[in-house]
Length: 463
Image (spheres, rainbow, N blue to C red):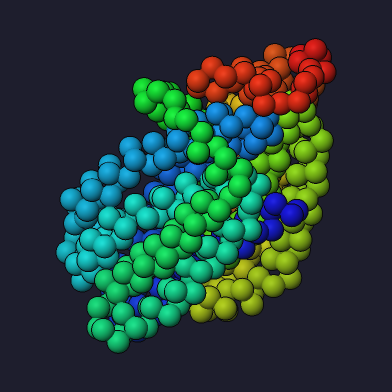
């Protein structure tokens, strides 16, 4: 819980930044709102790209911290920044050059009045994605070091600056949607600067980076190792995001009011799902750190994550059951859309409870090296969800909710089978997870040089 709650408020701050922009841009008209809304959705998808570096760095740094292996930690940090240097130009420069076709694509084609506004927003936001990506790498390093509070404070700092700069730039200097993009980039730049200061002041990291550098050609090895660790986590996130977007097309077969209700309900459930993802990150950090020390506690951490996430899922389900109509009114919805949305929220309870357990337990598998299998389960589950939703869409939104719950039940069954096979002495996967650090970093340095004598030996014996 101590690791998870700062992550939760950090994720909430990310959503709040988009809400702040939307509130001030709404004064410019519906076209401006549409432009910023679609641009924000694109940014959420791009988050999956940098998760390769951020998540991979978190796991590898946490393992190295547990093993007290400075070379492995330096390798993990260098790998994260190397991936940032590779991915950022592709997204920032490529996105800027293709900003108008991208705006046309996300707006559904045509020559609507929102097209030039979205293009203007992309012209600033996409080059500024370099700052967003760098902040994610900084957060990943800090979380791997066991510090989840500093990323939370950095996110709140960025939001505070956006809250001040939005009215000044959007209305005061009459920059419109470009002012919203500039305010967002400036707020994140200030947070990034403070994050770099926090990294510089970290004693563990300072001892790591001041040691002699290894050969330059190992930088590619560092980047590949970080990518191999983070790519399955990124794929899992992107698959779930893409499935949520694709489900809109299925809901559209039911009616326009149902599409509006589904969209509002999805945003309302973010408050719950972000809590699940915070537990997932905490479980990944804790598991990776203990594996680095030679202790395979995945089953125990998995039980703790399931207990905490299950309680959060049950609380979310009960809250939606009791407050669904008021939630729809809070989003400004009325009439048939509000009724459909309230029904949808009340039917989401079983899905949310299953989703909470699946997401939280995923953190244990990510840290233990089983993330590729988890990504495959998620991808198959999303495909199954879409097929079931299409078949049950004749029953309206309750049928869609039933499809979501059934698909998630299948994914939970697959993950439960994986979970039963984890733990000390339960096979080669457990041994590989514990011995990752023992084999050393990309430089070939054994972890035993920086670990107390005999640490981790009992687990290797059982393996």
